[in-house]
Image (cartoon, rainbow, N blue to C red; front, side):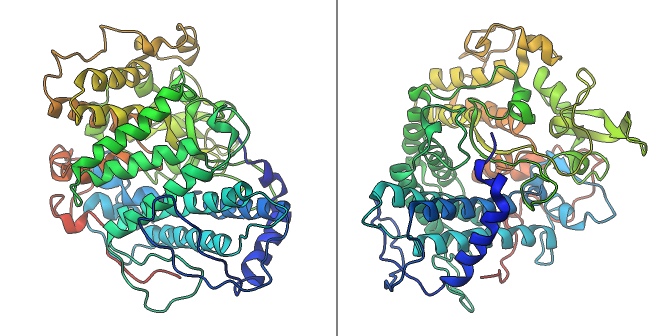
Length: 518
């Protein structure tokens, strides 16, 4: 699925620059919130407002996603999540910023992660500007203007959540004004703002993908808002918040998506990561790209050379060793992966660590279509239906419904195993929706998972493998909320780069706060 408007990105860039330079003095009335958890700062309206037509409002939405894709173009955000003992990098070269989290040596001098946080901040400020300069016009229905605001608030929530789970307490910009020495806000209050923004988005977003997941619309949807509300509430159930009553909310929002019957797992796991098949029924929200040679940020820098030639990240030995067998493992990683010769022909190299060829299209069984280019039209998937199933499974386990928890967990597990097949063409021949049917070869049962704790452990393990290397950082967030970072790193292979800090030291679970651009 590609963003239709990015094909006009040069035109949009001009309107985008105008938006963010000519209307900094324009204000609007505060928008009523369906759940006023956090009060928006009062904005005194002045005339004239920037947006005058529906077309200008549409351009405002597009400008948000230009900023969003800029902030989601690179793999460097994984620098914040690599302490989960799943990903690492080489000991040397220009990888210092990428190594810090894996070695539990987070510092304020990490240019990789603070560069990403600056981009998050730019996107948040951009959203604030759109919110401030959107007004209900007499000729335009309220639902249209609120859809613009809802897109801005969804993206603001998206980046506030990512930022506060990386650095904890931090400034929370809710206006476009430049603030010297901004107030540091407690992470829990930031989570309240994230929830308020997502609730507004869930009320007002307009997107055909809420009823047709293959519709060509790369903006946020109500389905995406529900999925992220579940993700936020799930994080609140554990450390450092420990608000376990929110499992009911996680179940409510994920059940709404499941019961709607619109989204589904893809039968073939790899369809989620290859450009021709990414517009599919499993992708709930993605940073979507097209490739052109002339427009900046219309292409992704998440695939290709980062995972082979440059080895910015690779899989750790023990994680690969314990990775469940099946098609997903074969597709995801191996010690042998494709590379390019100088004359442009491909070859297979053997590496010291498992390479994630999940982001190369390639395995030994299925030779790659896309190998080592460092920018591509590949979408960066942020939320999949598989995550909804596993969030619902964990919510069920924590609310006394073990049978449903095991069944939703097994759906993801069956798809991953794919009857033990390792070639895509063979997996495609399986009966459609095979993952909905009981499989004694791979299924968990109430006799193998006899307690809530055992079910949760199995779900976390499944999430770690299902989403390894993806932009959401799910395994790291799981280990933090369950306070199992030290336990996960106790299995660390001696061949990995040496630890500097203590994985059980919670001060090393966040990057330290430093002044960010505002």
